[in-house]
Length: 315
Image 1 (cartoon, helix red, strand yellow):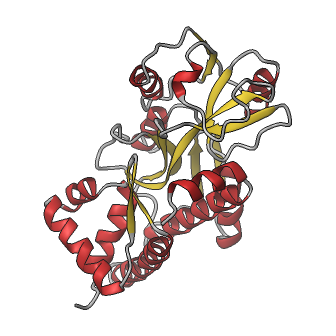
Image 2 (image 1 turned 30 degrees about the horizontal axis):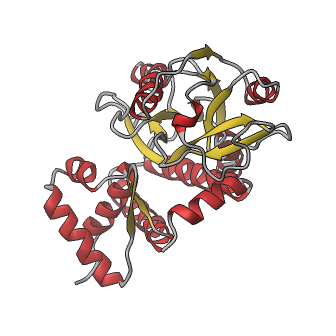
C-alpha cells in the first residue's frame, strides 16, 4: 500500500480523540473499518503506532513521531489548497483565553517566537464552558481548555478543538504522610482524608472526582472547595490540612510529595480550541506545536511522571 492523506487524517484523528471509536465517528466511518485501516498502516510502517491505556489509546514513541510528521504534511497540503482560495484568516491580534494550565507559559513563549508579527492578548478563564461561550460569541479567537474522557467538550460547529494531551491525575500529600513511601497510592486508602477540590470547571470535574471515589468504594468525608494558585494549594497541603488531586507534571514543594494513583482512575485532557472562521490552519498548527512542545518540557522536569510512564507504557 501507499500512504495517502486520508491515512494521515486517520492517525491524527485517533491521536486527537484518544479512541479508535471516537476517531471513526469524527471521520464519518465505522469503528471496524477504522481499526482495519489502522492495522494496515501499522503493517506498512512495520511497528505499532498506538497502545491501549486506561482511558483509550495513546501513541507509542514511534507513533508520536509519525503523528507529528502527519500533522506537518497535512498542514502543508491544507496550505496549498488555501492558496488557490485566497489567504487564510490571520487576525493581527490573537485573543487567547486559557484555563490555569501549566502549558500556557511555554505555549505563548514559543508562539511569539515563531510568529513575531503576531500580537497575543491573554485572558484567564477558569471554566472551560465559559471559554466555549467566549469563542461562540466571537470574543476570543483561540483557547486552552480541559475535558475528560467520556465527557468531551461540547460546542457548536462554529468552534473546533484538538486534544493536546490526555494525562493522568496524581495526588499531592504532605511530605510526612503515612503513604509517602508508596510508589503509587490507592484512592481508597485516602478515604478518610480531607480533600482540597477546585471548583467545578464547567467540564464535569466534580462529577469525575466523586465518581472515581465512588468506584473506589467511598465518599469523601470532607471536601474543601479551593480556588487559588498552585503554590498556595501546596502550602495548605504541606501544613497537613488535606490532600488534593493535581496534574501529573506538578512540581512539588519540599514539604509535599506527588504520587500516581493505583490504576489511574482519573484522567483529564488538555485541549486547543479555536474559531475556524477567525483563525487559519497555519496559526492553529503553530499553537498546537507550541503547546505540545511545552508539555514535553513539563514532562522532562517531572521525574514522578517519567517513572509512572516508564512503568505504565513499558513494552
